[in-house]
Amino acid sequence: MAEAIEELKHKASMSHRMLAMTGSMNDTTGHVFVRVPGSDELLARCRSPRDWSPRYVEPGAMHRADFAGRPAEELGDWVLPPERFIASEVFKARPEVNCVIHAHPPAQVLCSNVDVPLQPIVCAQNWVSTLLAAKGVPVYPRSLLIHAPELGRTVAAILGKRDAMLLKHHGNVVVGRTIEEATVRCIQIENLARLCWQIALTGATPPTIPFADFEDRAASMASGLEIGGERQWRYYEQMLERGGRVDATIDFD
Image 1 (cartoon, rainbow, N blue to C red):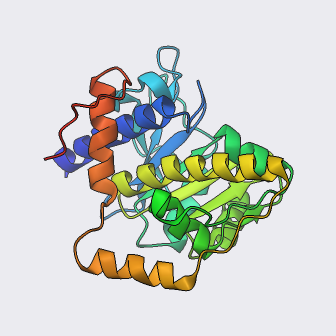
Image 2: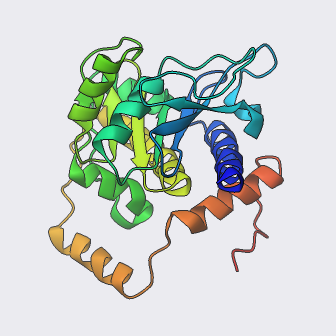
Image 3: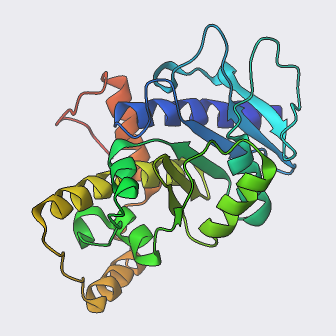
């Protein structure tokens, strides 16, 4: 179990760095929460005088808390984030979810401010976010910090069975079965939000994607052509290794 938790801490720290690198997480704000397997506990990125930024987070910043929000280990000078109640309530409501990400990505904040909906407008150009948007991306109507269990329960209720939502004037919540899945979803839905915002600026109404195109995507997934979260995770991992550069020689095989 200890070895598994250390691996989760490592992946969670990588997720923070990937999200900061891609502009999906801010300079000092944003959190990747991870369910501790077989328990009512989660791992949360804590803050201390020596670790404030997602861009440089280390595995040692990840600490355990129970689903009531209480520390589940000695924290020293580390401080649990108030937003842990988003994750604890989602984990309680969604047993299949093992990672919850909360961040303040700029395009999604813009869209939530003036009610630009995140719509499935691009199809194969960004299938990850298209499928999220096709389910609907609900909006939590308040802009306050989610700092208490009752607020977290409301967020979880509005999220329902969907995998992404906006917090009005504030940010987002994105979930996944794994850290890799949630991270890729978080990056790709911000990419979609940028397109939705840019189209809204033109005053045009994007066309509806034919249902047949979604059916074709389902067929490609069944035939093994799907590029899943783990493959894209490897791309972002290699970008981190190269200092955030996009390198044409990256080898996925």
